[in-house]
Length: 254
Image 1: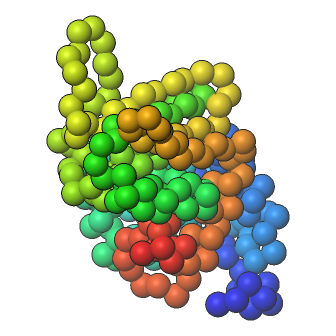
Image 2 (image 1 turned 180 degrees about the vertical axis):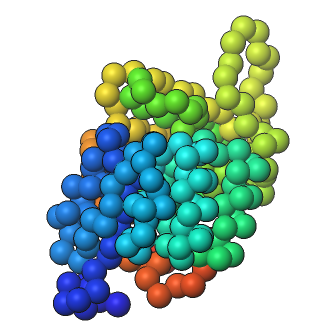
Protein backbone atom coordinates (compact mmCIF):
# COMPACT_ATOMS: atom_id res chain seq x y z
CA UNK A 1 0.00 0.00 0.00
CA UNK A 2 1.32 3.40 -0.91
CA UNK A 3 1.59 6.34 1.47
CA UNK A 4 -0.87 8.21 -0.77
CA UNK A 5 -3.43 5.43 -0.32
CA UNK A 6 -2.93 5.48 3.43
CA UNK A 7 -3.40 9.25 3.54
CA UNK A 8 -6.56 8.93 1.47
CA UNK A 9 -8.41 6.75 3.96
CA UNK A 10 -6.41 3.96 5.56
CA UNK A 11 -3.71 5.44 7.77
CA UNK A 12 -1.35 3.48 10.01
CA UNK A 13 -3.12 3.46 13.36
CA UNK A 14 -0.19 3.23 15.78
CA UNK A 15 -0.27 2.62 19.52
CA UNK A 16 2.84 3.64 21.47
CA UNK A 17 3.93 1.81 24.63
CA UNK A 18 6.04 3.62 27.21
CA UNK A 19 4.54 6.94 26.20
CA UNK A 20 6.09 8.87 29.09
CA UNK A 21 9.66 7.79 28.39
CA UNK A 22 12.28 9.43 26.18
CA UNK A 23 11.77 7.00 23.33
CA UNK A 24 8.00 6.95 23.74
CA UNK A 25 7.79 10.73 23.38
CA UNK A 26 9.94 10.59 20.26
CA UNK A 27 7.72 7.89 18.75
CA UNK A 28 4.61 9.94 19.41
CA UNK A 29 6.22 12.94 17.71
CA UNK A 30 7.20 10.84 14.68
CA UNK A 31 3.72 9.32 14.32
CA UNK A 32 2.03 12.70 14.58
CA UNK A 33 4.36 14.13 11.94
CA UNK A 34 3.91 11.25 9.47
CA UNK A 35 1.34 11.99 6.72
CA UNK A 36 0.26 8.35 6.55
CA UNK A 37 -0.07 7.62 10.29
CA UNK A 38 -2.42 8.34 13.18
CA UNK A 39 -1.82 8.03 16.90
CA UNK A 40 -4.38 5.44 18.02
CA UNK A 41 -3.19 5.31 21.64
CA UNK A 42 -0.27 6.09 23.92
CA UNK A 43 0.04 4.26 27.21
CA UNK A 44 2.33 3.52 30.13
CA UNK A 45 2.73 0.89 32.84
CA UNK A 46 -0.47 0.55 34.79
CA UNK A 47 -2.73 1.64 31.95
CA UNK A 48 -5.39 -0.60 30.40
CA UNK A 49 -3.45 -2.12 27.52
CA UNK A 50 -6.45 -3.97 26.11
CA UNK A 51 -8.41 -0.72 25.84
CA UNK A 52 -5.40 1.11 24.40
CA UNK A 53 -5.06 -1.44 21.59
CA UNK A 54 -8.78 -1.67 20.83
CA UNK A 55 -8.55 0.64 17.80
CA UNK A 56 -4.88 0.18 16.90
CA UNK A 57 -3.45 -1.53 13.85
CA UNK A 58 0.14 -1.68 15.06
CA UNK A 59 1.90 -1.45 18.43
CA UNK A 60 5.35 0.15 18.62
CA UNK A 61 7.07 -0.90 21.84
CA UNK A 62 10.42 0.22 23.27
CA UNK A 63 9.88 -0.66 26.94
CA UNK A 64 11.13 -3.56 29.10
CA UNK A 65 11.06 -7.28 28.26
CA UNK A 66 8.38 -8.35 30.76
CA UNK A 67 6.06 -5.50 29.79
CA UNK A 68 6.60 -6.04 26.08
CA UNK A 69 5.66 -9.71 26.36
CA UNK A 70 2.44 -8.78 28.17
CA UNK A 71 1.64 -6.26 25.45
CA UNK A 72 2.31 -8.85 22.74
CA UNK A 73 -0.21 -11.25 24.27
CA UNK A 74 -2.85 -8.53 23.95
CA UNK A 75 -1.71 -7.89 20.37
CA UNK A 76 -2.12 -11.58 19.58
CA UNK A 77 -5.63 -11.64 21.03
CA UNK A 78 -6.67 -8.52 19.10
CA UNK A 79 -4.77 -9.24 15.86
CA UNK A 80 -2.62 -6.11 16.22
CA UNK A 81 0.74 -5.99 14.41
CA UNK A 82 3.83 -5.23 16.50
CA UNK A 83 7.16 -3.44 16.08
CA UNK A 84 9.46 -4.30 18.98
CA UNK A 85 12.60 -2.28 19.75
CA UNK A 86 12.90 -3.46 23.36
CA UNK A 87 16.26 -5.07 24.22
CA UNK A 88 17.52 -7.29 27.03
CA UNK A 89 15.34 -10.36 26.35
CA UNK A 90 16.48 -13.76 27.59
CA UNK A 91 16.65 -16.73 25.26
CA UNK A 92 13.40 -18.07 26.68
CA UNK A 93 11.68 -14.72 26.19
CA UNK A 94 12.82 -14.59 22.58
CA UNK A 95 11.22 -18.00 22.08
CA UNK A 96 7.95 -16.57 23.41
CA UNK A 97 8.14 -13.81 20.79
CA UNK A 98 8.73 -16.43 18.08
CA UNK A 99 5.63 -18.30 19.27
CA UNK A 100 3.46 -15.17 19.22
CA UNK A 101 4.72 -14.37 15.70
CA UNK A 102 2.99 -17.52 14.44
CA UNK A 103 -0.27 -15.66 14.97
CA UNK A 104 0.58 -12.00 14.22
CA UNK A 105 3.31 -10.27 12.20
CA UNK A 106 6.16 -8.82 14.28
CA UNK A 107 9.26 -6.81 13.41
CA UNK A 108 11.73 -7.46 16.23
CA UNK A 109 15.13 -5.77 16.00
CA UNK A 110 17.75 -4.53 18.48
CA UNK A 111 18.02 -1.25 16.59
CA UNK A 112 15.45 0.29 14.27
CA UNK A 113 17.69 3.00 12.78
CA UNK A 114 18.16 2.54 9.04
CA UNK A 115 21.83 3.58 9.29
CA UNK A 116 22.60 0.98 11.95
CA UNK A 117 21.07 -1.74 9.81
CA UNK A 118 23.20 -0.60 6.88
CA UNK A 119 26.19 -1.00 9.22
CA UNK A 120 25.13 -4.58 9.99
CA UNK A 121 25.40 -5.35 6.29
CA UNK A 122 28.78 -3.60 6.02
CA UNK A 123 30.05 -5.63 8.97
CA UNK A 124 29.04 -8.86 7.30
CA UNK A 125 31.04 -7.94 4.19
CA UNK A 126 34.03 -6.64 6.20
CA UNK A 127 34.22 -9.76 8.35
CA UNK A 128 34.32 -12.03 5.30
CA UNK A 129 37.17 -10.00 3.83
CA UNK A 130 39.08 -9.55 7.11
CA UNK A 131 38.68 -13.18 8.09
CA UNK A 132 42.32 -13.82 9.00
CA UNK A 133 44.88 -11.88 11.00
CA UNK A 134 42.48 -9.33 12.52
CA UNK A 135 41.38 -9.03 16.15
CA UNK A 136 37.79 -7.88 16.58
CA UNK A 137 36.45 -5.61 19.31
CA UNK A 138 32.98 -4.07 19.74
CA UNK A 139 32.85 -0.79 21.65
CA UNK A 140 29.55 0.83 22.62
CA UNK A 141 28.51 3.89 24.62
CA UNK A 142 25.09 4.91 25.95
CA UNK A 143 23.49 7.27 28.44
CA UNK A 144 23.63 6.65 32.17
CA UNK A 145 20.01 5.43 32.31
CA UNK A 146 20.44 2.38 30.06
CA UNK A 147 19.85 -0.77 32.09
CA UNK A 148 21.28 -3.55 29.89
CA UNK A 149 24.89 -4.10 28.80
CA UNK A 150 26.23 -4.69 26.26
CA UNK A 151 23.53 -3.02 24.22
CA UNK A 152 21.31 -5.12 21.99
CA UNK A 153 22.86 -3.39 18.99
CA UNK A 154 26.39 -4.27 20.11
CA UNK A 155 25.40 -7.88 20.62
CA UNK A 156 23.80 -7.98 17.18
CA UNK A 157 26.98 -6.56 15.67
CA UNK A 158 28.93 -9.35 17.35
CA UNK A 159 26.48 -11.95 16.09
CA UNK A 160 26.71 -10.64 12.51
CA UNK A 161 30.52 -10.71 12.58
CA UNK A 162 30.69 -14.13 14.23
CA UNK A 163 28.24 -15.66 11.75
CA UNK A 164 30.18 -14.25 8.79
CA UNK A 165 33.31 -15.90 10.22
CA UNK A 166 31.59 -19.22 10.86
CA UNK A 167 31.73 -18.81 14.64
CA UNK A 168 29.14 -18.92 17.42
CA UNK A 169 29.24 -15.72 19.47
CA UNK A 170 28.46 -17.66 22.65
CA UNK A 171 31.76 -19.50 22.25
CA UNK A 172 34.05 -16.60 21.36
CA UNK A 173 32.70 -13.50 23.14
CA UNK A 174 34.35 -11.87 26.14
CA UNK A 175 32.48 -9.11 27.96
CA UNK A 176 35.14 -7.71 30.25
CA UNK A 177 38.85 -7.95 31.01
CA UNK A 178 40.64 -7.38 34.28
CA UNK A 179 43.91 -8.46 35.82
CA UNK A 180 46.33 -10.88 34.20
CA UNK A 181 44.27 -12.12 31.27
CA UNK A 182 47.01 -13.74 29.22
CA UNK A 183 47.45 -13.32 25.49
CA UNK A 184 44.35 -12.54 23.49
CA UNK A 185 42.94 -15.60 21.66
CA UNK A 186 42.84 -15.06 17.91
CA UNK A 187 39.17 -16.02 17.57
CA UNK A 188 37.92 -13.87 20.46
CA UNK A 189 35.37 -11.08 19.93
CA UNK A 190 35.64 -8.55 22.74
CA UNK A 191 33.01 -6.13 24.04
CA UNK A 192 33.60 -2.86 25.86
CA UNK A 193 30.76 -0.88 27.43
CA UNK A 194 30.63 2.81 28.34
CA UNK A 195 27.77 4.42 30.28
CA UNK A 196 27.54 8.14 30.94
CA UNK A 197 25.70 11.41 30.49
CA UNK A 198 23.13 11.64 27.73
CA UNK A 199 24.90 9.65 24.99
CA UNK A 200 22.12 8.43 22.69
CA UNK A 201 24.12 5.54 21.26
CA UNK A 202 27.59 5.08 19.74
CA UNK A 203 28.83 1.77 18.31
CA UNK A 204 32.19 0.88 16.79
CA UNK A 205 33.51 -2.44 15.53
CA UNK A 206 37.29 -2.48 15.38
CA UNK A 207 39.23 -4.88 13.15
CA UNK A 208 42.83 -4.59 14.36
CA UNK A 209 45.45 -6.15 12.12
CA UNK A 210 49.22 -5.89 11.77
CA UNK A 211 50.09 -2.36 10.71
CA UNK A 212 46.50 -1.26 10.17
CA UNK A 213 43.07 -1.13 11.73
CA UNK A 214 39.62 -0.71 10.28
CA UNK A 215 36.82 0.88 12.30
CA UNK A 216 33.16 0.81 11.31
CA UNK A 217 31.21 3.29 13.43
CA UNK A 218 27.66 4.49 13.83
CA UNK A 219 26.74 7.41 16.11
CA UNK A 220 23.20 8.43 16.99
CA UNK A 221 22.62 12.11 17.72
CA UNK A 222 18.85 11.72 18.18
CA UNK A 223 16.35 8.97 18.95
CA UNK A 224 14.32 10.17 15.96
CA UNK A 225 16.29 7.79 13.72
CA UNK A 226 14.89 4.88 15.76
CA UNK A 227 11.37 6.31 15.56
CA UNK A 228 11.49 6.81 11.79
CA UNK A 229 12.82 3.29 11.30
CA UNK A 230 9.99 1.97 13.47
CA UNK A 231 7.42 3.62 11.22
CA UNK A 232 9.12 2.08 8.22
CA UNK A 233 8.80 -1.30 9.95
CA UNK A 234 5.10 -0.69 10.68
CA UNK A 235 4.50 0.05 6.99
CA UNK A 236 6.33 -3.17 6.05
CA UNK A 237 3.88 -5.21 8.16
CA UNK A 238 0.79 -3.98 6.31
CA UNK A 239 -1.11 -6.85 4.74
CA UNK A 240 0.93 -9.55 6.49
CA UNK A 241 -0.86 -12.21 8.52
CA UNK A 242 1.99 -13.46 10.68
CA UNK A 243 5.75 -14.01 10.83
CA UNK A 244 8.83 -12.77 12.66
CA UNK A 245 10.92 -10.20 10.78
CA UNK A 246 13.78 -7.83 11.50
CA UNK A 247 15.02 -4.60 9.93
CA UNK A 248 17.12 -6.49 7.40
CA UNK A 249 13.82 -7.84 6.04
CA UNK A 250 12.23 -4.40 6.16
CA UNK A 251 15.11 -2.85 4.19
CA UNK A 252 15.44 -5.74 1.70
CA UNK A 253 18.98 -6.57 2.81
CA UNK A 254 18.64 -10.35 2.98
